[in-house]
Length: 391
Image (cartoon, rainbow, N blue to C red):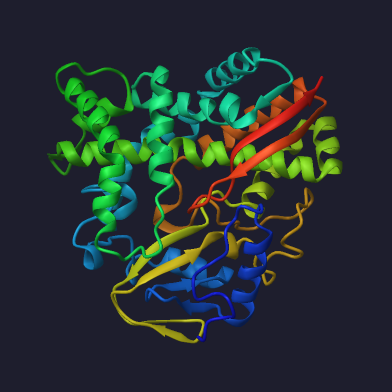
């Protein structure tokens, strides 16, 4: 498990668009499939191992309190708990994300996309600012029942959290830093939740506030923490997915030409984009006992980082993985996770991405990225992307 040259300080920055990171991950998969970094965290890189970690919630727990004393996202956050509590909470939220519920949102999503594109200042625009961010954040705000007009606030809170530099995810001080970054958003949601207790409406916040699990309601903080995660996760992945897919098509003009001729290829393009440029690079777990992975023993009570991006680039599972291939027969890309924590909003994200791409490619015969910048933390994707469109 000796560290590769230059890896002791962790993976390289993604500010070059991922070229250096892809090379680093390739080396890790080949020579160091399980690697302990200088903070004592264990990193897992190969597809089969990542999938196994995500599927085994008994030995790889999502509950970080055993290391940190308290959860980084507060009590009751659905991504940080295990069954059976996780199963109960997920059931409360599932009704808003059933296939029929999501399909029913298509006309509204299409209307929002058209409104945003109608408001473009011209053929030169920031794709993220003009469409990729406001589309999904408006949808999730309407689902929750908070004003979509507050989306500038949501963006500021999201950027504050996503810009946190976290070299050591087992650091006990992390919970306090995350709490500080989320304080304003949680206060905002707390006010809306308090309002729903006395004035219920037809939205997801009301259902969370008044729902019962085995005769007990979620307490106020559980509702707030669940709502905050839904607000963040409900737009970040789709925002990055839309930007990354446009970038992939700009880098692969032949694929873009084929899709314009046949829009039914858009879902395949989105899947391949998620595989090639997975929006969330990693998923963290904590070992509950000593466990063997790829021939190495990871002790109990250690933080394990399962690399979704690396798994989606594993040559053992995907041929020529660094190529955007519209004809790839995708089986099991892991961008939305796996196991009990598989992304609840995966279908919604795919629907939003499809509609955004359909509308964009129908309006512009070409989209040329002129300037771009990338996230520098746990998100892999464009933070801003100025494009020039040709009609």
